[in-house]
Length: 95
Image (cartoon, helix red, strand yellow):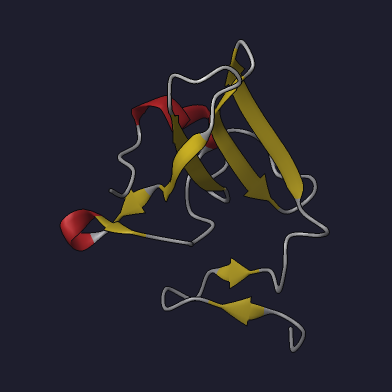
């Protein structure tokens, strides 16, 4: 489709996140993970972009880092929509 972007692996990458489905996982009030996918994408499909957050010990906590899941050779951080939301806790994230 001419109105879509693709990454180096020919995966669809939306122009922006305004029309994407968003999932978040919290521990109490602390955001641990955030994921984005096309509407209608199931949690177990390899079509998610996922980020993990680290926070400080302040109340309320401050976000210190937002790291995206890593994939491919050398575990490089990726902005690709190639992960499963259901795998978020076992993925490796950029540093």
